[in-house]
Image (cartoon, rainbow, N blue to C red):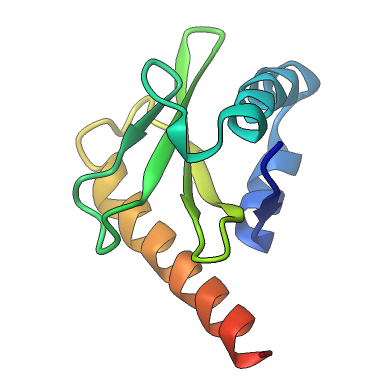
Length: 117
């Protein structure tokens, strides 16, 4: 099993989901814990526009709506859930908004972890 942590940004988003949405997300997170960075399509895919070549997204369908959870595995091999959102209604600009946020969250995480060493 892989260790998975999350940012406050991700946690706030997760808490905003209804119980059915949370259950769908948790099912895919179980797969991530089992497979780690090797989890692939249809459950995960690489985010090509990120500053980080190992940035990925979890792909969750909840009642026909595409949820994307941005994550990366740190140099210490810990999975970090960075941020998430629902693509419905903003498909064209979704990644323009979410990828910079994911990059920022990951940078902050790395700075915090490596400053404490």
